[in-house]
Structure formats: C-alpha cells, structure tokens
Length: 124
Image (cartoon, rainbow, N blue to C red):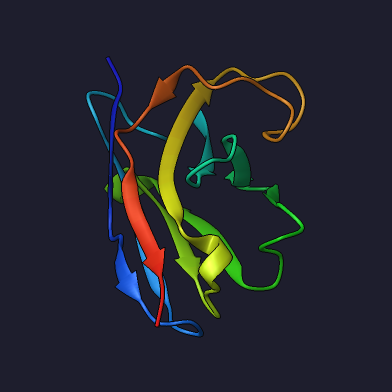
C-alpha cells in the first residue's frame, strides 16, 4: 500500500524559498501521477501543481505559476515542490497526493492517496 510523507515546511519571510518533499513508501512512484494541494485557514483546499506519471506534463495554478516548480525523482520515490518568491498568501498546509492509472491529465483527476501535510508560513 502506498504511503506518502511530506516534509520541508516551515516559517519563511516574504520573498524567501522552501523546497517541499513528498516521499513514498510501500510502492514505487513511477506509475503514479502526483498532485500538490494546499489549504489556508478559512479557505477551501486548492490544487497547486501536478506532474504526471510519464513526467511529460507539469501543471500549475495561476497563483503560483512562475514561482513554483514541481519535479520528480523516481529513483528516490520522491516528488518535490520548489517554492520561490513566497508571499504571505502562500501560507497554508501543503499536501501531496498520488493516483495511478489516471484518465486524461493530472489536473483533471481525483487523488486517493494523501500525505499528512506540512505547514508553510510566510510572514515577516
């Protein structure tokens, strides 16, 4: 059974950077598409970015495009989210999620495997 664990969150100042990691165990990630999501206080969960199983598609929410980069290392069974030029509105709990055998692209699918989340706080 696939398990996901996020790490790398913390407190940073506006304009700073963080790299989040999503490490898989139980199964390899090579057959899974991966999505990053976030949920801020008082707001609904939103999609941030995703990468498909073939590493051919990378999709970003408009709010993070140009600032965040998603990547994967199947040899390490890990997916990363590099976050640059962070803003206070990026403050949220960030979750990674995985789904195998998707139809269509990774933005238009449901995810059934989820990590526990990691807190990102952007504040002066």
